[in-house]
Amino acid sequence: MKKIFEYSAFQIVEKIRNGELSSLEYINALFDRIKEVDSKIHAYLTVAKDMALDEAKEIDEKANKGEHLGSLCGVGMAIKDNICTESIRTTCSSKSLSNFTPSYDATVIERIRKEDAIILGKTNMDEFAMGSSTEYSFFGPTINPYNDERVAGGSSGGSAAAVAISEATASLGSDTGGSVRCPASFCGVIGLKPTYGLVSRYGLIAYANSLEQISPIVKDVRDLAILLNCIAGHDERDSTSLKVVKDDYTRFIGNDIKGLKIGVPKELFGHGTNKHVLKRVWDAIHVLEDLGASYTEISLDSLEYALASYYIIANSEASSNLARYDGLRYGFRSDEVNDWSDTFSKNRREGFGQEVKRRIILGTFALSAGYYNKYYLKAQKVRTLIKKDFDKAFKKFDILASPTMPILPFKLGEKLKNPLEMYMCDLDTVPANLIGAPAISVPCGSYDGLPIGIQFIAQPFKEGSLIQVSYKLEESLQD
Ligand code: GLN
Image (cartoon, rainbow, N blue to C red):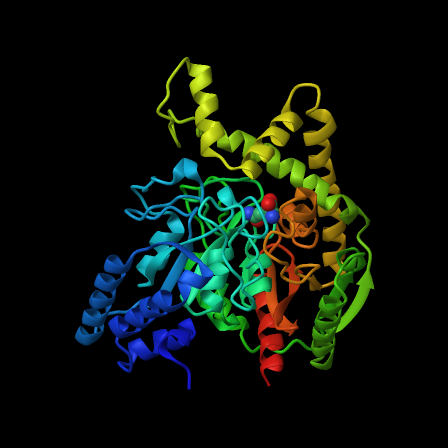
């Protein structure tokens, strides 16, 4: 029998609505779970226990009075620490923001609260979301729940690990180049990066604006549909948020996939992909074939340049976004004050970790006069070519499939010596961000106890197709 803290969100909602479960009892069970496992996993940076328990009591009162209960009523959620939460510390895992408590909620937080979700706390991440392992956190790494010598993936490692080990029922992360899909894959849970512009970024502390989206992490596909229903939709406070008619994503659950056309881009199965990963991903594609889908191997030539283009664009945007953390406007301020320029340098030198500094330097270089055309502009042109290649593929195929990560969860410390090796891990995830398309990672088995994820990419606004195919796969693999 499942323990209370192991239930999926849709089960919690059902049980609270029909009076079978008290919200307070369930939230208490989650905090007991956090107490039991988090010293080992380190998924949380801050827990908001008092606030959460008060909210749970309010939900129980509403339930007793027969009042309306939202679509996420009582669901205990963990939030990545780069999403602003009113009165709850929000650090971006950086020394520079280690004392920052926002005075407002991000739009996504307002929306989940309106549907009666409960925020349990804030989760660990790579500093400013720059990384693929959660090792670049000022507060120390998150540990993979399946193997304590390995990373949880990143940068939303805390949000994925918390869901995987049932310290939260669902969570929010952010995905700039794979930061939700990577840890979802490494921790054996589901992560979806929505279409660019579908979910408001208001209140998300920016890393690379043109690439990132706030993204849900869940235990099963039904929960994903419910959570996406709640957070998707136009927000006038985010100028990049699109005015689209909101879909009901739950209507895709259970639809069959007969006739679905899957494209399999060979560049995303490239050299260096672990053979056990390849095997599980192909097995999953064959499962879909048995359910009536068909697949064709294809080639998208421009993908060869996706990673280089991504890192130039992401670092350029980061260097500009992070300029505000000078200790005067935002961020860490050193005690020692000399002249302005000295003080700014000192604040930034002490406030940022090594990887963040590396990216600011690379990004500033790529944007500087004389190099702008050669790097930034070129990277943007490559981005357009990649988009064109994908547009062509989507004329023939409903979705594309690939491994989420080319490798298994790696050992702690293994990739810290060589930043390029860390960047290479993002080979299969960055294309979806460059073209603004939705992409999901779904568990498709494991090797030696380590989870493996398959990635599906769809055309912008076709989250429904991703939910449809992912649900069918989940259902088949559970049998
Ligand atoms: N690993 C990628 C990077 O470091 C992606 C990060 C993210 O999606 N936030 O840029």
